[in-house]
Image (cartoon, rainbow, N blue to C red):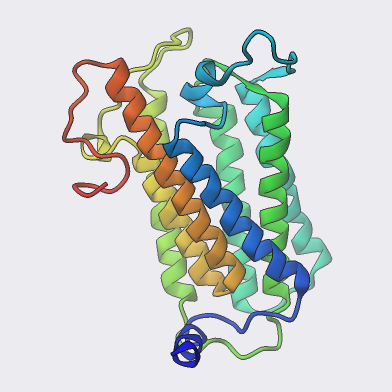
Length: 271
């Protein structure tokens, strides 16, 4: 049974490298992000966006340094973006799959930085500890994914080649994510700090279509990579975004009496 499962998986992924670091990071990436997702379900939220106020420091606790959300998120994404750019300098041009992976990761973080600077409208702040945690997480995840792919050089591709379907999924995901972020940005004016129920696009079906498309883009990156680390990260991230979207729907439902109850959290008609 176990041998059959392993042989089936190896049709879709590269053999796991004999690297203790990659193995440990695969386990850590999945468990840590999945845990954050279950924490969201229990009401313990990462303190940013609409959950900033609900997670603020209460009296009696140590005072924590705060930064504005725009600066916080810019700091969160920039190290990972620089890691992507550096990989093109430090690692010699290799096969098409490796080029596609690094290009997809670079485009992903370039889009995020572009959105922080020119698309998103922020109304709250972030705790500096959370900013550092997010920044380190993105940087380590990105660097590990690139390194994991580097270790596959010289190894035959899996029998089922998913890199080009992965490119298609990635483009669909990043395009859909950007479009729904744009719709969210249009809900507020320059000095408007109030939240509203989002409309347009897939917002009529789910409250977090931007998360849905982000999962699709991560799945696309995993299919381009076809490494165990990439898929473990994507699965953990999907569980986190499921928990975050469920908490977001619960927040909108509690804040707006006219919130349409048929609107799901993440997956149309299902969840």
